[in-house]
Length: 428
Image 1 (cartoon, rainbow, N blue to C red):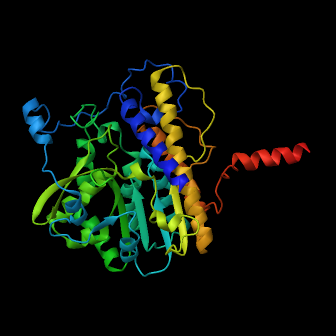
Image 2: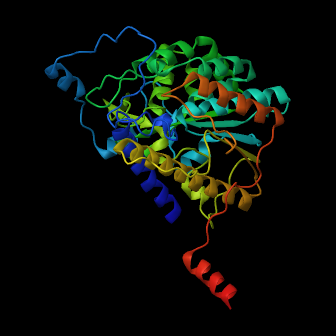
Image 3: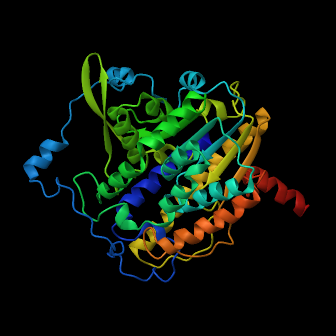
């Protein structure tokens, strides 16, 4: 239990640091020594595109305050809340009973796609290369968190979307994701990303997702329900299968919410209904409670009587596992940036340990892909196209080989008492 609590604390620290640090230092340039000496008030790089500003920008303070209000609701109403006209399309990520009902009876390999921002280009490359190898499985279940949620949709719909996935991660800039214009709830405005998602989630894509759902496969995307304080798992195939305008809109809003880093990006509000009342839930990045999702915590802890339902587990970590040596400059920005990197990497390692041990306990074949330490290119600003293209190519090369690690690339450190005992024995 302690490991999971430790992760949640480090994740919270990382999110807080990220919220403060975004305006001070571009998050993707964490390791850039050349950038480390810049003034701490440096903003993100100048955006190369000038999209038309959303109509609601510049509203008066009175109008903005009115816009931010929402009806109160109780904990009981939250527990009963459903999407109007779309009951049963979601469940809490920590509910073992709901999870058992939601997973398909089809045995087989599962694909787990992690958070990672622009490093999602690596995962996009892995999937494309995997297709070229001819060894990419037909996964009964695909789960995605944050940037992993965006690529999960394409991965679930099938290899014919590999080219769309490549373009999505190599042909964008920061201007396609956010505008450096603070809102009452965030440091930036993500209306460009909302528009990009609306263009990407086409009727054809939804139809293909729905077709896979009807075959018995499942696509799970995570958001964090801030009102409930819990992870929400959305059955995206069931939503797509509804085939209505409301379901299409909800589909896009969930993807936007799954990538809404609290603080830097604004939350997404989703209308729900309980006891005849409608109200708005506040949802943010699915990575708040963990960078990846396999199962409720009760399935993962040692000694659990629950058993993982897959035969093979393929985890794509969009980033590096290990923290590398780096001396931060004595500026607020670089201290924050370094802290963010360490917190997020710690969270990923904790999850990987839980997944690996649970898989080994249950006889599930464990497979891991991650950015190797040999990749040393540094991003020059947020969503640097050259960096993302290079990272995509790195993933493509690894995917073609279909070479996944069977063991963790690190070993959990022994307890201090164990280490002291070993040292004493050697001394004798």
